[in-house]
Length: 586
Ligand code: ADP
Ligand code: MG
Image 1 (tube, rainbow, N blue to C red):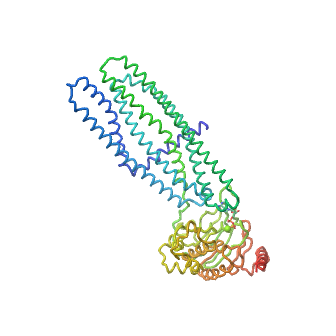
Image 2 (tube, rainbow, N blue to C red):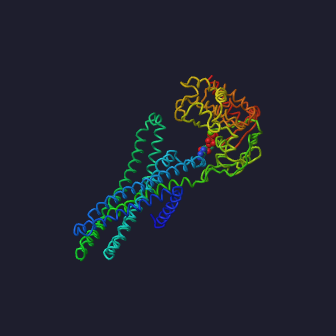
Image 3 (cartoon, helix red, strand yellow):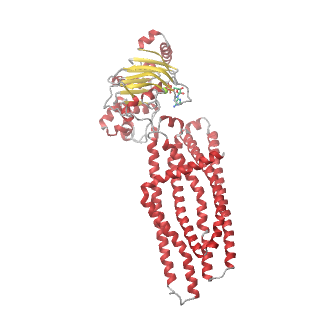
């Protein structure tokens, strides 16, 4: 690691601390109570020397004080110590759990508004691991660190104050070794920082490999991928273990080295005390107190590892929080849009390094009309549908709905105008009814849900489920067939009753028979709304008002079915070949 980037790392470490402090704001009171508790706790530690001193004095000169004085003091201090420990720890745990809760909610909330590009580039399991693992790591290490710094830090200060008060020359010896100890801690800390980052990355790796193998278990077994999966999981797991062992090697070595340095200093002090004059109780008390320094100092030096783990985790959490949300600067809202869509000189690439996926698209769709997009797979149909739903921003050109640019709409309002059935259907692990009436539709009546299901030809199979509309359909609808899933998704879109309907291969998993039936329902539905249908089976789109043929990101033909057949271009070619295939089948 170069000098430069090391400095950067420590700098960002500082930034991270400051930012974490910001989260304390809502917990000022509990935090203050906790700190006060630790202060009392450490004072009770330091008063131990005073007790010893008084005890020996009472032994030597019983007539000088009451014999009850020291025992009573012990009980009182023990109580104060216990009570302050309880208050301080409990208050701090409230702070730390509260911060976990805040961070978790903040990150989840962020995820709801992250731009599509983020999801394109990340593995979903890593996001899960961020919420379940990294955030806990942040708060646990921060609270452990804070607890230790205050509890042990105050104890060290109180002990040092006592020792200085007793004999400042002797005590100065301890300060002489402090820089050595600090140097060792700093050295170890740098290693901790590096290793923590690696440990955390490998945790994310483990999560995503597990996720892929679990979700794809059929594929893994069907294609004999067990060996490959085992190998890459083991590799990631072993990398994690190796880094963990390195971390603990340094962690375990650091403590005895520091203890040894401290003990040498203590031995030196003892040697000097033995050659000093004065009351033995003062000497004993001094040495006992000096000996007491070892434990809190050990605890203090041990937290640097913990802190580095926390910083690495916090960096990963803040990284996500800092990603700009999906663009939503528009303020235009409309109760129900008319549905005229115009696409003007639109070009698009997914990221700056990707090549252009759409090139100079111009398309006007009057309200209430239907447009079918056809073209080879990869020609950009889904991409165009995503742009109309504003999941991405055009690289050049614009899209308007009723003459208003999509970017001028409030995102939530725009999306209310569009019902999208996408190629990849998402279903939730809840009931059939809840899946159809999702989101804004949650308060739809049972009759409306039923009607939508009927129009989507889903009613038959729903009624055969064990509990009908109240059947839980499993994670992402695993208990349904592909065609059933599509029919639920169509029912959901029908229930939404939006002025713009986009169907992206929405009937691809249906058999010809069901598709024909749904087609009838869809045709009915298209009557009063603007519809964009993407279909690979041409028979389903012949009735569209306009058929747009796309190839390689461009519109190469458009017109009605008859016009395009007459033009004898690509559409006509596609049509003939599909007709042939269907003839073969039939
Ligand atoms: P179609 O729906 O017509 O089959 P798509 O719109 O899905 O085509 O894809 C068009 C092109 O864009 C393809 O070359 C595909 O590789 C690319 N593409 C699709 N989705 C993404 C994405 N999220 N990031 C980068 N490239 C993408
Ligand atoms: Mg597609």
